[in-house]
Amino acid sequence: MKIRGNKKSNGDAVLVPEPTLRRLPGYLSFFKSLKINGVEFVSSSLIASTFNMDATLITKDLSYTGIKGRTKIGYNVDKLIDTIIVFLDFNTTEQAFLFGVGNLGKALINYGGLMHYGLKIVAGFDVDPGIVNTAVKGVKIYPIDEFRDLSRKIPARIGIITTPDNKAQEVADLMVAWGIKAIWNFTPQSIKVPENIILENTSIYSDLAVILNKLNKL
Amino acid sequence: MKIRGNKKSNGDAVLVPEPTLRRLPGYLSFFKSLKINGVEFVSSSLIASTFNMDATLITKDLSYTGIKGRTKIGYNVDKLIDTIIVFLDFNTTEQAFLFGVGNLGKALINYGGLMHYGLKIVAGFDVDPGIVNTAVKGVKIYPIDEFRDLSRKIPARIGIITTPDNKAQEVADLMVAWGIKAIWNFTPQSIKVPENIILENTSIYSDLAVILNKLNKL
DNA sequence: TTAATGTTGTTATTTTATTAACAATTCATA
DNA sequence: TATGAATTGTTAATAAAATAACAACATTAA
Image 1 (cartoon, rainbow over the protein chains, first blue to last red):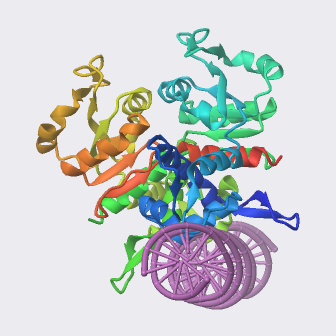
Image 2 (cartoon, helix red, strand yellow; image 1 turned 30 degrees about the vertical axis):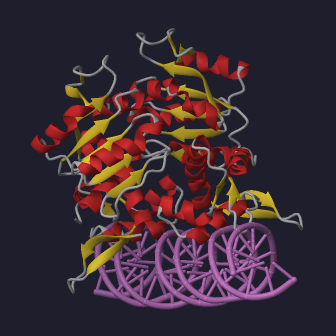
Image 3 (cartoon, each protein chain N blue to C red; image 1 turned 180 degrees about the vertical axis):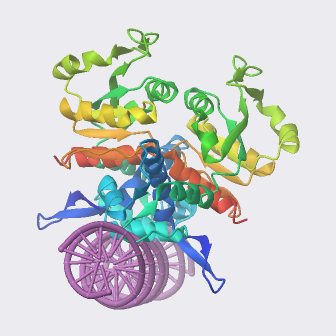
């Protein structure tokens, strides 16, 4: 799938390959650590060796963001960081509701890091009376019933599912009914949504499958 | 990157595309829920509609596992489940050490689900005196110093990094030094390891980048 | 001032993955 | 028993991504 990116000089939208989009946050993290270490310029070949990739793929990926490097010098680290943050929309804050405040849900709320990547969890929902009406790192946890009212007050477009697997579809349906535009599903359960709803599945089991496969080839 | 899969009749190894490998755990989850609902057979077209994919890609993916469907009937659900579990090595248990018992680390230990996918976290390590020498869901947490000794007693091949970002490389180096074969890095930090070490990065920021990008095109 | 070198950035090629086309199979039904 | 329909599974075509090749350029050093 291709993604709309920068504009060409003729005004047409450039299509950004999803693999490129997925690699950019990794580069960003690397550039941030370079900055901390006082590095001002970085070449595509250095980036490539860090990520065990081909250098031309680096320049290609970066070119999608519209950033220009200087020959013989490389890319300006500050500019790389700023450009990628804007390109990935990490500079604007998107609000999200989180369903299922168990281990993983709590971890996501507690993990302040998301804030720096453009996402703010504004409320949690759960069925457990033990956690409802408490707060996790300042984020209030509500009973599911209150989702409807709250969704009218708070314009959150993203819904995060960290419930037990067998509740994923049910929660997704609820989200769609009350206006959530993008669903981030952390359960391995496949869920169905209307095609105008954005659905992203984060499955650590896919990563695990790759690790085990490689391990068992040794 | 291609991955070794089933054997062909001539004895040569079939190469499994990594995208296929990554999709299989999702199918597995779906098949398990079908089984719970008493469904015995499933066709590629039904699977395809569930995952919003082309049906031929489903049959192709499944064919790598060596499973055979019956025309006009579809695939036997029980057999699908068993075959995929074995194919992905989810039936054998691999032991893992986890470094960084913070929010995410705790969540991974608490999340019993990994056990059913072939992974058992056997020990945690941290620098925080508040958590060292306690146990999380029966998993003991040790000071980093004891990693060396423990790694000689317990033959864990996988190391999980859930430390703060700036500690990731340090911990990775330690793991490599004491014999870890595969590193599962949950920080966005890129880390360098010798090329005989398996490295898998799980970056939720990549997923977030995709979501934000699609959302901001609406 | 000029030549050599390192680096970007574009275009071409190759590889990989997905989709399409179609043949083979087998079950259900008339 | 024959025919039609549904479904697998293979092969072919297309699309996408990664890699390679190379031209353009700016900096440094002679």
